[in-house]
Each structure stands twice: as structure tokens, then as C-alpha cells.
Figure 1: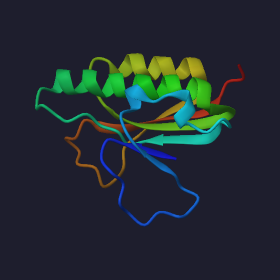
Figure 2: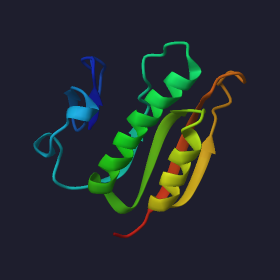
Figure 3: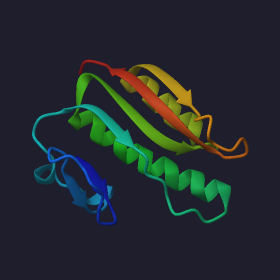
Figure 4: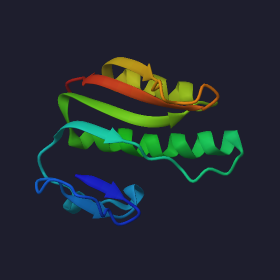
Length: 128
């Protein structure tokens, strides 16, 4: 299942469902009742050029996804989010550690070295 502000118009397999909407406005009725094995989020805020503001917006998006994972990710499941490094990043990492057995920071080789964009991977969600 994919959620995007913009219509998703790419050739997806038939079993992949998409919703056009805001992740902050999702309702339980819009999501499947069974939990996911993995949640992938490459959401990023519209950047302003002000690093601290962009990092705060990235943090808010990722907190929303982390909250959704509490209800919609199976125990033992994994979560991958795109994050901007900055003041709130360490708090996000700490929050991930409370939910997952292992937390890793990943930066793709293709990423520019000066980019503040990284991926945060939470592995094996704790049993509730």
C-alpha cells in the first residue's frame, strides 16, 4: 500500500494499492486491517533551504510514520524512513530504539557526501 500527496501513476503490480492523501489525515478505515511486515517511507518535506526547519519537518513526518507502525506493523516487522540529519535526528533515533531491537543509519553510496539525507532502519519491532 502506498500513500502519496500526488496521484501515483506508475505501472504497479495489481496487488499494490495506493491512496492519494496526507499521511497526517489517514483514517483506520483507509488502511487494511492486517498489519504489515515492513513499512517503507521515502517521504520528505518540501525543503525551505533552512536546514533546521527542514530537519524539524522531516522529524514530524517520521514521527507520524513511527506512530503508524505502532498500530500497523507486525511484531518482528521492519521500518525504513528517509530522514534529514539535524537537531531532531538523535531524538528520532532514540524513539526508534524504544520500538525496535536494532536501529541502523544507512546512506546510499549514490548520495552526495554533503547531503543531510539518510535512511533510518528499524529492525525487528518489539512485541507489544
